[in-house]
Every structure is written in structure tokens, then in C-alpha cells.
Amino acid sequence: MNRNTEALAEGIKDYLSTNSELLKLEATQESSEVVSMMISGLIIGLLAGLFFLFASVSVGFYFSTILGNHSSGFAMVAGFYLLIGAVLYLGRKRLLESPICNMIIRLVLRKTQ
Image (cartoon, rainbow, N blue to C red):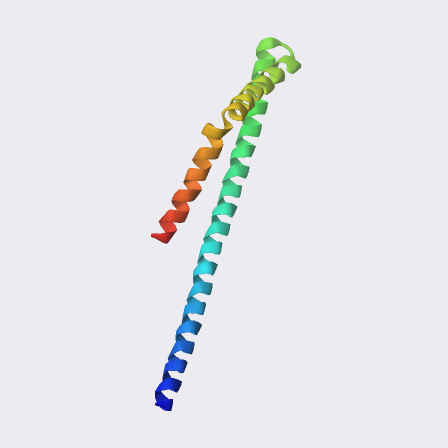
């Protein structure tokens, strides 16, 4: 009987050790996926930001040429961004927060299924 109890205790220790190791590996995998998604999003965002920066400068110079005044051309570009910013601010729940929240929920639920 004592031998069976020792074997059972050893089996439980092995199970708990294996389960602990599995949880560590799963946590490592999840965190590495989150970090890689963040880094790739950051790189894509940086490239998109640079594209919009140079496109905005180009459009500003284009309007400056048409209007004959540098400040007017760049003011039109700034006004466009102000309008976009106002629309995003006023509709931030529907346009930004809800879609981002839903995307995160889908990612989390996809991982658990």
C-alpha cells in the first residue's frame, strides 16, 4: 500500500511538473505572438506614416504651385487633416474603438478554440 501511495504521489508530481511546463510554453508562445504582431504593426505603421508624410508634402507643394502661395497650399493639406481628425474624434466609438475591440476579441477567441 505504501508503495502504491509513493507511486501515486510521484505520478501527481510528474503531472504537475508537466502541466506547469506546458503552461509556461503556452504563455511564451502567446506573448511572442503578441510581441511579433506589435512589432509588425509598428513597422507597417511607420512605413504608412512616412508615405503619408511625403504624400502630404507633395500635395502641399502641388497646391502651392496651383495657388501661387506656399502657405495656402500647405494650409489646404492641414485643413484636410483637421477635417479627418474631427470626423475620427466625433465618431471614435463607432469608427475606432468598437472595431479595434472586436478585432482583439476575435484574436483572443481564435486562440482559445
